[in-house]
Image 1 (spheres, rainbow, N blue to C red):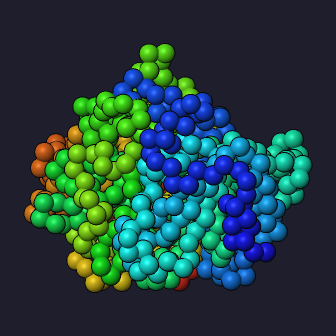
Image 2: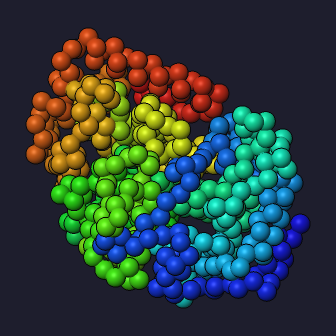
Image 3: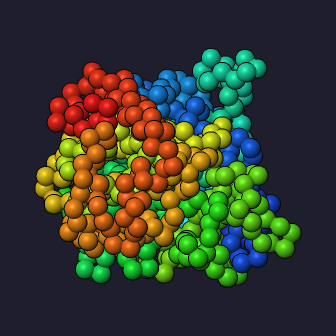
Length: 547
């Protein structure tokens, strides 16, 4: 099937097509067409159906084409295969649905600040608020786009957030629901034909994460390591990366007034250094406090006319006077805001930097047994990168009510579709070429597990991050934890030494020992199940907790 011809035909139809509409008009349409409301400060508020307050992994698919199938790790439960015929049916439904709309929007943007590998992306959607999100999050097309390795291989994203698929038509083709029919949502990507479709999911993160997945698939073939991380730059030009799953603090900790933000969530590490994929930030809002996270708060809630503002607040409680309650999670604990990077006070304009000197792995340990900070050698770092341990936080995915321990390799497994060695090999090469200090920072619980202990105070974590970045932790003594194979500092500037060893914060040491050994056992079991038959170097395997 000639997908490009069908898209060209759709774009030449008689429907009213809004090509690259100005930001002000997009905001105006989002408000007047009823999908967004101005808040008291000027940002736009929007609300999604209950099935679209987070990602929907079970409705997310990769088309299994002959050309690319061997590059994808089909053993991962996150890589759900879709046959090409089903994708063709969804594509045809999407095209016909779009052609029957009174009007729709087309945005031409790119993913990637480095013009040598910026991916041209054409987003086609019937909702103005989706186009506002695209305007916030995806980058303007650079003048020298013809230099990109993807210049002749553009990607098309079709988004129909509020339309639903025919449940009976797709019975046996999409996942089966309790009524025996198929799900009416599909988030599907065809790498070979460079097309993605978001059908029935109004969660804006569905569009963002699809394109991150696309970059993660394409870039390793060109020697570029994609990373689920934020990045910032010190006044001396030193670059730091923060790797972690949603909710571990990437956005908050990288938005530092003393360091220029390169990017919030997604980057590529090429032979020339680090480059942000995006143009904006997509931050969690639940329990956001101005005094603790001023950069994020002020980006969303600075006062401006709504036509000039454009920060998009998703699924927050708003009162009739336009004020937002950030502590109310009745709609979802996964309330979000998207805004351009320029809304922050200290950003690097070109969104690129040199090779990183410090990498920080962030984990939110709901068991409360990992230390606030550990220093990792090369093999330890490879192991923790491969395992990607954290606790899945409530609300990031639909149906998740309480935190639970999870392993997500590379701190972003759902978005890393390729065979794991493709990413491991690239990281190993980058680490050998560039001297990088690597730390594991726990932003989770201390003094007990979730429900008993307390969440790590953000100000303590900030002091730890400062010590990681300014070299202070290179000058202290460490002791070795033989259970988790971690190097734990005896002291850290600005932090009470008592809390650095997590057992000190528990009232019952036997309970700590039991919980710690149980987590180490979870590590060992997961490693054996996921990588027991893979060619993982022995020196990396030996660093797995429980081994």
